[in-house]
Length: 353
Image (cartoon, rainbow, N blue to C red; front, side, top):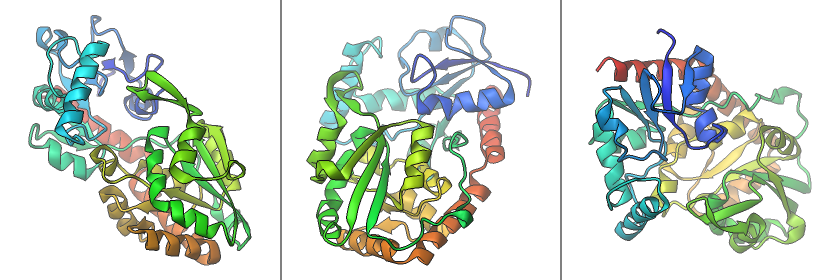
């Protein structure tokens, strides 16, 4: 493929958001393409993110191949009212320049307009294909997170003082509600500490309005004592350091919210790269990947969360086997070469239409 000038409608101005740097920016840098955020310049292809102005005249005035990188499951809104309010809010906020429409309506129309659509999981692809059959499944690149050689680690041993790692955006902390009683029970036999690698502050509305402290959200959803909580600002370095101090990672999620239920398996793959056994809620992506990797990551009830956390804490050989199986899966199925080829195909398919 010749070197391209890629017109990109980014998630962040500095292209540093995970959805920018781990996706199209990662591919462009590796392949030597140029990212251009001024779409009035000469460009060879447009890659649109979820923060695109879907009603921009540029999509009608220019005959340029269009790729839609649709990472999240906005085609499955929580409710019709929530869907409408999201669309109205984005119109009022100025992201979408015209038309009052529920947000999933904008997404459907833009999927149809696009020459190719990229998503993050087979579960999302099945829904998107109703609006565009040229779909491609591409997960994030995790190359910024190093693989740990767990054969040299001594952390897989029974101990009374245990640090458990949680990583992610504050908006997903509501999943802690489902393990709240389990944490209290385990605290009777173990000195538990939870390391949260996340933003120390968050916005309740549209990532821009009503700033709140993350620690308050953690306390609300988990009832953890202050002595049990450590919050570290998200960065690759902090994540690696906290993983080195931890025994187990957990990803409890609120599966009643479609946007969360249909998220891909990125967080689970990252925990395996970091050398940690990881327990997750029973989302479609986590179930699929845990089965393929031969791991016991899935907890589908409070009872299974309790049983699996106890097994991991008391069986070092199981904890190590979980990580070995997970890392083998990542190396075979989620390596740099595979990701780059998937991006090649997605972009080329749009440009050949």
